[in-house]
View 1 (tube, rainbow, N blue to C red):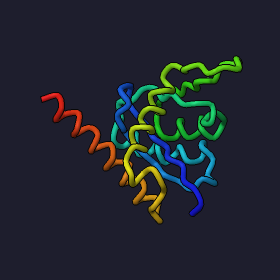
View 2 (cartoon, rainbow, N blue to C red; view 1 turned 135 degrees about the vertical axis):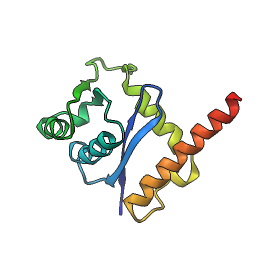
View 3 (cartoon, rainbow, N blue to C red; view 1 turned 90 degrees about the vertical axis):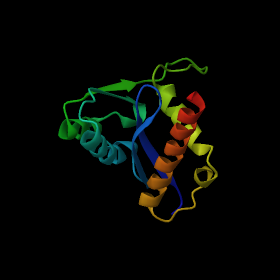
View 4 (cartoon, rainbow, N blue to C red; view 1 turned 45 degrees about the vertical axis):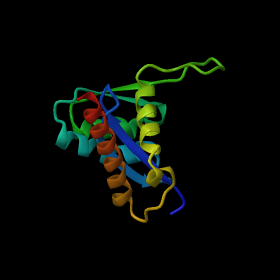
Length: 136
C-alpha cells in the first residue's frame, strides 16, 4: 500500500477516543463514517464533533446524521496568507504529532490497516501511562 490516512477523534485534552486507518485513496469524508460509528459505540454522550474543511460536505453531514444526533462544526482556515493557529483544530494536530514520535508510526510498516490502527492505540496508551506515572 502506497499511503495511509489516520482519522482520529480526540477529546479537548487531545486524548484519543477513536481511530480509523484507511488507504490514502479514500477521501476524508468517506473515511470518517467508520470513525464516527466507532465513537458512537464507545462514547454515546458526545454532543459535538469539530472537524476541518476536509470533512465538510453532504457525505459527512449524512454520516453524522446516521451515526447520531451530533452537531457538526467545521473549522475553516482564515483567508489571510500567513499561518494562524485555528481554535480546536490544533488539538488533533498535536495528538497526531505525539503519536508520530513513536518509531513504529513514523513510517508505515504495517500491511493491514487494522494493525496500523492498533499501533496508534498502543502509542496513545503508552503516552497516557507515562503521564499517569509522572503525576504520582
